[in-house]
Amino acid sequence: PTRTCAMSSLFPTSRWSVLVASMLLELCGGSVYITNLYLAALRPRLFPGAADGEALMEYLVFASNLGNWVPLAGFLYDARRGGPRTVVFAGAALTLLGYGGLWLCSAFDVHANFAVLWLLWFLWGHGSGYFDCAAIATCSANFRESRGLVLGLTKSFYGLSGSLLTQVFLAFFAAPDAAPAFLLFLGVALCLLALALAPLVRRLAPPRPLDADSPSRRFARGYALVGALAVAMVAISLLRAFSPLAASRAFSLGALGLVAASLLALPSLAWGT
Image 1 (cartoon, rainbow, N blue to C red):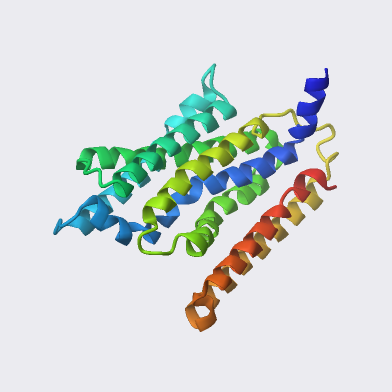
Image 2: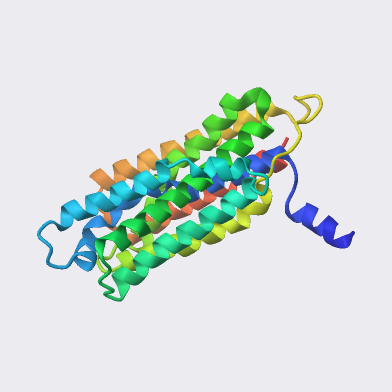
């Protein structure tokens, strides 16, 4: 009984806590948007001296996009031994394997052939699709009466994830030789975040009555938070483009701090009223 109580306290069973976890899970899946941050730095490491290195890198980007598009995660989600947690675990494994393999190839001059590199890019892209599937399918099941609103919130974080991860890159991995370290960060950090969120991503019965958990106010607060975060990202981008001060690392750390503060406000959807 004590263990059950502790787990209930640590992992609340509210459908709003599931929504918060799903929004954060989408951050793990949105790494498909940031490949341009490190393509130029990776090209001489993966294809040293290759005249067609740029074209080969584009084929690798296509592999990650193709992995993201292949809809196998849905079959696992609906399988008898599947479900949201299993899908998240699979996504975490694929992400770690894909990014981890690329880190090995780029950091230690492992001259892997193109087929191996293509497969690694496909794997982490495919893992991104598993995170998206788990988040979207679970929130749709938990908010049957307001699927449009909940999917809008969840997918907004999938779209914002590229901007949020860019702040991490610019704060810590912008050096020309830091691309392999960034790949390692993506593999480990996204995997660990997904595993930490997995116990919260669960299907729950809707409350009775359906408005018992104040959905209108919570959705309004959620959209306000997402809107504020989007405006902040636009402002940071404009400052980077037009202000010489934005090139400093202090600015990058400040931008990252603003992102972290915004994310800390997200649990208010789950534990507020």
